[in-house]
Amino acid sequence: MTGGGLAIETRGLTKRFGHHEAVSALDLDVPTGSVFGFLGPNGSGKTTTIRMLLALAAPSTGTISVLGSEMPSRSSDVLPRVGALVEGPGFYPFLSGAANLTRFDAAEPATSTRTRSSRVADALARVGLSAAARKKVGSYSLGMKQRLGIAVALLSPRDLIVLDEPTNGLDPQGTREVRALIRGLNADGTTVLVSSHLLAEIEQLCTHAAVMRTGRLVAQGGLDELRGTTAAFELLTPDAGEAIGVLARHGLEPHVARDAHSGGPSADAARVDADLPSSVRSEDLVAALVAADVRVRGVAVRRPSLEERFVELTGEGFDVER
Amino acid sequence: MSNADAIAATTDGPGVGTPPSRRGRGAGAFLLSELALLFRRRRTWALLGALAAIPVLLAIAVRLSGEGGGPSFVGDIAGNGLFTGFAAITVAVPLFLPLTIGVVAGDSAAGEASLGTLRYLLITPVGRIRLLLVKFAAAAVFCLTAALTVMIVGILIGLALFPIGPVTVLSGTEVPVVEAIGRALLIAVYVAVSLLGLSAIGLFISTLTDVPVGAMAATVVLSITSQILGSLSQLSALHPYLFTTHWFGFGDLLRDPISLTSFGENALLQLVYVVVFGSLAMGRFVTRDILS
Ligand SMILES: Nc1ncnc2c1ncn2[C@@H]1O[C@H](COP(=O)(O)OP(=O)(O)OP(=O)(O)O)[C@@H](O)[C@H]1O
Ligand SMILES: [Mg+2]
Image 1 (tube, each protein chain N blue to C red):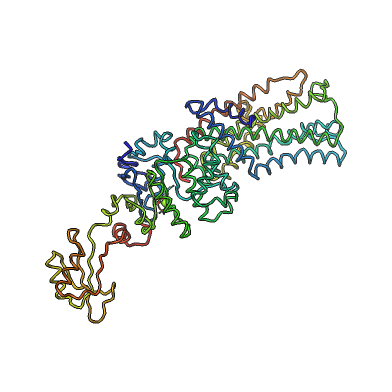
Image 2 (tube, rainbow over the protein chains, first blue to last red; image 1 turned 90 degrees about the horizontal axis):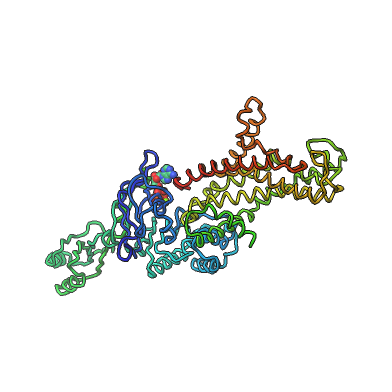
């Protein structure tokens, strides 16, 4: 079931709080070996879904399979293979960072007492907290707590790691470290589910993603699928008329851009835009333009960013939708 | 280490039906971790310190005033220091001991929930039943520690401030000092057992809420309510079923020959409370959504 299958599969997953449906009929497919971005505005049901995946909350209806076993009924077999950070870290403030990790490690039935201290030291080192290991967690900064929370997920080797907003409160170095950490884990074969609002982050990191809106899945798949494949071809030239002719002969539908937001055309140059079909290569277009004596001042191929797609899917509105 | 292992071994019994070798070692490690957590908190030491202050204050008051009289045993302190322990535990049983047990038992699940550590323990996965068993075992250890603290500090301060001699027990005969100390420790065990029912009630209340202070207060209020009900003669039909009924029955351990009847009745009653409220706690906790 693992190797090549789905690390997480939910069907019709629904969670109601009273009459309020926090998650509605969710069919999530997280491929084994992927870095999966779990996106959605505030209150869209990401954390609630993650709680159900980890058997912290029971689904109202629907089924969940994690690492090939049904949840929550098989949670005692599945959870030792899963590491997680859910809705921010939680610690005993009166214990040191190392003592906190020791406590969580001791809670796991199958771990060996003999190697405990080395596991704790390794996990602390991986999140860059070795120097603060003996400090009380009560005196940690927000980002230090966040790092320690990630360390909890790394105590034992895992097949699946679930990180709910892992870079919340981290400094730029910390954010980069976490990104590198996730890549490293993934290279070792761990499937990683990351929820985040930071789309640039997800875009750099993830192979797959899903987008939630008010408890419903609005899109899911490989990152390229999600972004859409159509790129925009933008040409800056004083010879707009000839350029349009050349591009049209290559099957594009060019037009002179009305707005001048990118490139800022100089007095005598105009911008010509066209959608770039995947069958046409931009270098061929440039060669053809030059051959036709079109003066090329600038060329850009723009792909829509995940952010544009995200806003398209989840709406422009700033207010939480419910 | 060996001491704690022994404690671990005794709590393995009702474990979670998995191979004892692996799971057993794990349960021991987690119980150790739970006890370390309990006894590394300043709050625990503050509670024990407050309990230790009871015999100290009693002894000093008697010493300074030089007067006899007062509630049971207090009048005997000046004549025999060993009575400080008996007097202190009599003073501590109705309110101070239940207060400290209420704090520890009421905090057990709700405290983890409010810190946010509960979800991480469950993801680890600690096992919900196992977590409750270990929490109860830790509360039981605290009951014993608390009762012994009152008694031992009482004996020590009595030794320091007053003459010591054979104790005249309730039936009028004298028992030698060493045996009297043995009986004093047995009384502490009796009191610890008395508090197990309350611990189970506190554990159950603690699984109902994410607010530890609420669970603590509710537990303490219940212990007081039960004692008030026990003092109303109109409700005498109810009395045998109150968990506080035998709280002052330890006087039987000061008879000659020693009578273990009330010890046995008390232990049985507490066992019933532990089973009932333990089951309620598990029933509630196993199915509960952890949204803290
Ligand atoms: N314990 C609860 N009781 C009632 N409603 C809840 C509870 N927890 C969450 N909800 C509701 O469920 C919905 C989804 O919440 P959830 O925490 O899953 O959102 P999220 O996507 O993680 O948001 P964020 O990005 O802010 O973390 C929200 O409308 C929230 O009000
Ligand atoms: Mg969330």
